Image (cartoon, rainbow, N blue to C red; front, side, top):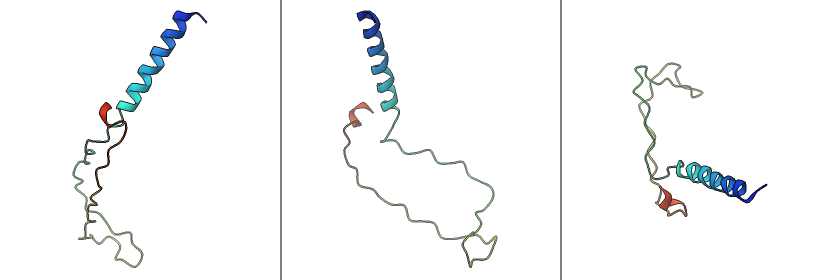
Length: 73
């Protein structure tokens, strides 16, 4: 392998790695799914089949911890 070919391969590998890592996107909120016109049904054992559940799970607040790749975002 010539030196030029090795250099091109190294640049290509670094570019692919940078694009892969920058696509992780830790800081952004995930996109919410569109509103579904059908109500959710209960699938819990002992519940009434087809009953709508009124309880929503409480959102968990996670602490913001810095990560080594955050400057790439």
